[in-house]
Image (cartoon, rainbow, N blue to C red; front, side, top):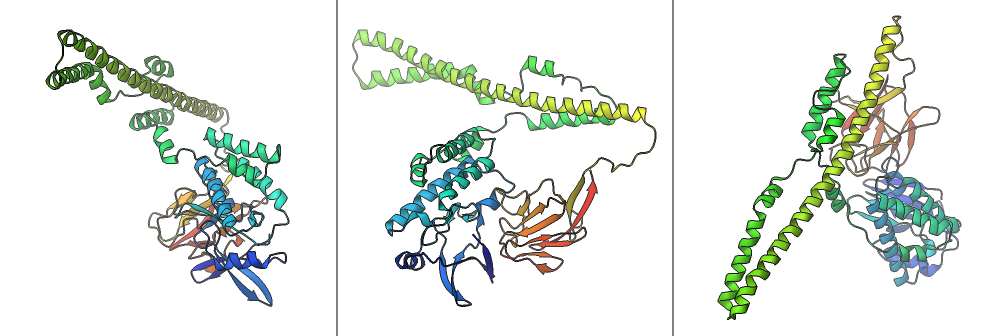
Length: 445
């Protein structure tokens, strides 16, 4: 598809020519109705040709969202869930699902409303047979490998499409089930290592390197740490439960026994057997709760130990590198160029900031906006869009900037960029994003 974006005051449109094979009924249904999961559109005639203008204001295409941030499992689930609802909307108006464009550049997502919207053209796409295969390949390439369930789901989709030749209907039926929310996953994956202790350890370790002492601080030897296995501090509530929980359960059993005697008339045998049953039941409940508590703390302990091992392994590599540098410095006494063998690193300097704030372009593509979900750097400015601009690098090493359909546009040396226009930058060029002006600079690192 030949995409063309048009900006009009505070609106951004994606303009597409009306297809010749579009049926009159389907075309009228698309223009005269408002769909929840399809892009709203209108018809315009320019230069004697009729075009469809799709409203993409405040939305970003799936390809841009996953340019620098991987596709999460939750977003993958929402993609197929909303695609299924879009198809149900089309069925309600007797429209053919073949008109849905499955190109990642034509699938839009609203970061504010947390929903996908799909581009629909009356009539089928010429590349419709391969669109689903390309989408499955895109998902496999962009899925977040830190989420095993998401990876499994992505490869299952890929296998169904590429190996078994599944169509969209089969895929939507297979992927219709929801998965747990990311908020719940985030709570389950919270680190249990004491952040203050880790920071103190790293600071002490780095201070030793600065002094030239390649030794670990006292009490931080890995063997000593893992033999103690006390990386997770027991919760105060858990300690109180272990100490007084049995008495609490027994007391509760006594209260129940008294209430039963007060409410019911029991025989002598029942009065003798009832305390035994209550005692056994309350003791069983206590030990069951204690088992669950111990199991949870043990899992947290094992997780903390694993993370500590990874951190110490990284520090061991750092220690080896520092030792190599120290040996190289003792062997060679001649002056060397500091930039030799170093990579040129680019960064943005805030020209209006008093402290000269720097934004390091640590990778490419590098995206700037105010959304924490899809931006590599957050700008807390109401004039900045959720996904405002993207910095890239050409095969020749040139740095580029692209406006991502932002409301207030992106400016280079005072000149505005069109939506999704890419421009090559030179060192010292000024880039305005929202109300902040940056200057592109570089250094050796």
